[in-house]
Length: 423
Image (cartoon, rainbow, N blue to C red; front, side, top):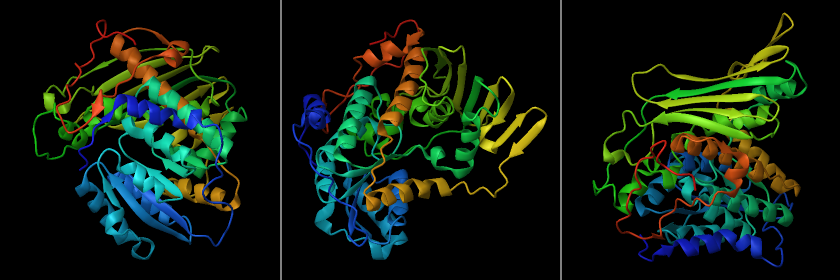
């Protein structure tokens, strides 16, 4: 692992690099059906390796040429997972297995397309560098953990658009053909105007990992257990229930809420080893039209599970996860046979098809807004205050540590409504 520390200033300078460029570079790959597209994987955990496998399956003439992870062992393990799936499409030489805080740069430099799946606290920095270097990008959700990061992603997304780069985000439900058809019907007023969306993500316990140190203040511990620290994951609402937030944004046709209030807490994760995230949230988003989005999410064992989106309109209702619409005494259900896993492949199929066609797609700004909406709900719950969209856009919050190094990194206190202040 690299011992070179990376400061917060380095991070912000890197994140801003794309926005201050005075000339735009051409995309690294143009429309050329026979050209080899070289792929780099940044972040070699389960989601990263899954995304890399999807990327290799999306085009006939692609190869994985570089991998990077903050931990060398994770980089090597992830590489072998991908190699097992596509042995003929993996050409990663030992010197192209990168680790440390800045290994992503070398991996990005080696590729035409970058698959980004490191913890989301790093996403703005990784995305800004890829755009600066003229790379096409697939990046997992969420895109940031605070408003500062979300604004950086929006700025980089705009530069990527000007450069003609393709960017696809990992909001996988938007790539499910059954949900696409259902949402299209909603946008065509199949149930009239949307009044309420009640969306739930109630699930079980999260993974834990063994670490060399059991001290949560150590940087290595936080990175191995990244999900449990808000500066890395954004908390449960932002990292996982973000899909529910994004589905609501989709149904609302991109309209953002005017404000949010919320509640929740840390009922079972009381041990310091579980960092500083909560285990449940309940958020109400209010819209200028009077519509509401009610989000409930929970991550506890031995409790009922539920992942659904009930959408109520002036002339009917929709069950989005079951692709069913009821209106005027009639019921429409998508007639096909649903393949839940296809949406993960479709993300990459459409990304690589756009690169080959020279017709860039770019959903990064839209996806950054979904991310910011989730952060808005978290902050409303953390502080116990009503947070407006305008306040969220102007927030100066930056959750990143002062520097990235293998040293002790103090863990901020668990948020306490009424005491935690909005920044």
